[in-house]
Image (cartoon, rainbow, N blue to C red):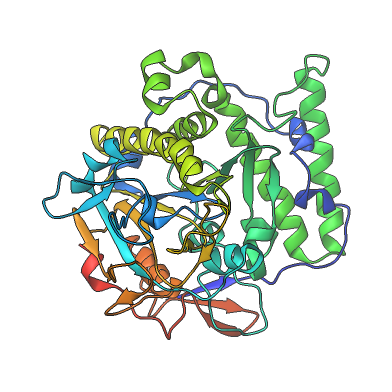
Length: 427
């Protein structure tokens, strides 16, 4: 089975705003505000989804999934037992420890890039062989290979601190159509709603004019730009009908307490609502994990916030019958050094690190791979990020050994063919 892809449009155009705007033009789209059910039952039964939690900067595996207490570089935190006998994680994750029967830990990651600038892109793109093209991030890849869910909601949204907008970078050679709609601070895009000063009739007339202009525009331009433009308006039209998803007053106070009154907690709760509404791929980003100095106090502050929201998410997905259809991934671009530097920090360490997963297509209650006593190296088979892409695609029902991209006649593997799948983590 082949999936045809379109090349990235590198030309400047009147649609240049697609890469940087906050969807200000969205107010020209449809203006319906119909309330929708909180959870689409047919979606939960049939559509696979992804929750991708990105801890930007590098969470320490030693203060999370692979603690080494009472060793030279182990640090001050204990390892605690989990719900699965024999598997221990950091004491900073007590709530998550009670959900270990839902999780898969991979403790055998060994990747190549020691810098954020290279590591973030490489890890989220799966490190395909260098073929002179820019591969898509995982979210854009899933958006292309699987399309929207049956809900018709945007296939790829990104909940992040600071600004939002339509982010085309993630799409790589697939073209800007497969970029991410980013919700800055989890909020609705600016100008999503039709201003009260613009009547419904005027809005409809303006949208009709836009469609006519787009037809003329398409005649003299590459289709990638016009496709991206029309796609954005279609996405915004869907979001306008689900503006309730951004209404904080509709969230029960109990949920707010369970996820935590923190930025990350709010964003994770927003992510759950997006999954319930039928978004195919939801990415949540947390910044501030680059603990070169004061690593232990940094993790003492950061990890409990993740523990609270992550465990609440697992509970909710399980209770709603969604966990078997949602692939949950929690990771960074690398781990942190076993060695403790002169600033009581840990530096970058791609040589031996860990991630956590749950849900769709995975075994439950498993710790795969191991590191040596000090955590300096992987013992046994080490896995680069390409192996994880094979795992994730398989979990979603995509055969990465047969499925290819088609980049203007150039067949490209969707995952690095030199990396082996980690079969033991799959159900």
